[in-house]
Length: 248
Image (cartoon, rainbow, N blue to C red; front, side, top):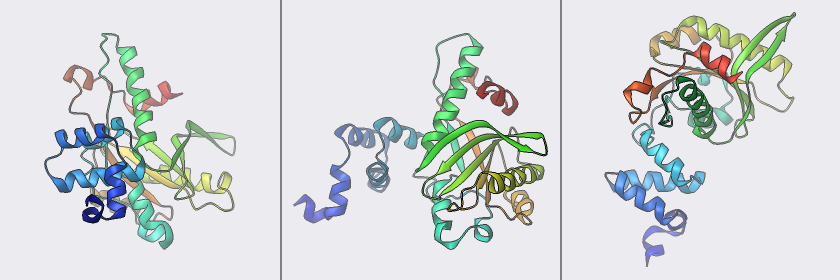
């Protein structure tokens, strides 16, 4: 009877997640549409209960139709454009562990580890290549903050961490990194590298103008701290320069 009501595919999703998943959804979601969205996502992406909880706190359902400002329409093939839009979020929740310690160094290291862990878990098909990835151009060194490979997009993904608001100069810096990655590290069967600037705030109009002359696919996303993080720990978040040193 249940199979007839839901259909084979829907019943597979409903029954394909654990009882603990369902209890979490009943306690945390306000209606059936929201619960069904998370059921499908949890089943298709094989989310653990921890990941499901993280997605709910990140308000994935409420933000499901939001896309980050980007130039994908002019820089990516039609075959992967929609996949790219689904792979990246407009806003990322930096969900940190509430470490019970007064040692700021311990807290900072815990935050850095969780930033890396969050980015690893935030999208489907990502493989972490490294942080402070070294690029060499005419004996000059340059470093990409975080470098990934996305199996679905079949391309390298460079992420630059920036404090404060997005600035047009960030687009030029990221475009340079992507040019080098495409020339020096892209494999013959791979698509062009994609770049993401992750910053605290952004103006979509500023991003639009900054990307107009760029030939590489890029987007700008923002981050926010977890609302569950105690106020006395929020100011411990290292700025991007400190983050780079800690990751290195």
